[in-house]
Length: 136
Image (cartoon, rainbow, N blue to C red; front, top):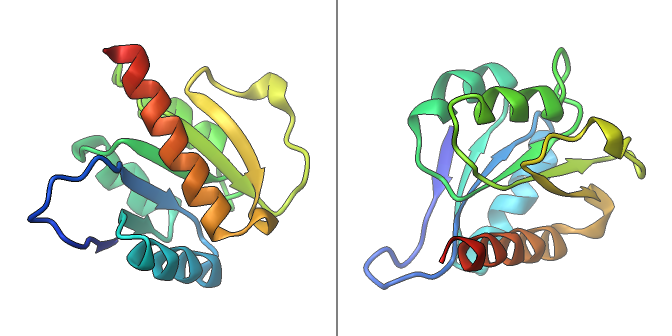
């Protein structure tokens, strides 16, 4: 697990984003953009690490790779939601179309990694802000 934060002394309206992706190049690219954008991003490079650590963490949005090897992002999402938390999830994938019928209710969006890190992180911010508006 790697966490990148910046300007922790200021009040931040941006979410704590968690990325679970076994593609180290994509994870590094997202980390670099998160640093530039002053976002708090925690990266897990294996599903096993995410299964062990995420239930104990506080985070606002989860970006889950659709294909994590032996498990899918959908399976990981179901596991994370089983404790009753309603954290919004975004699936990211190299595949253009992900079958929507299998999505848990927590999945707010699925997007191709080809959309790029700025777009993906921007959508994650928007999903977080929309979820906060619904809560308040």
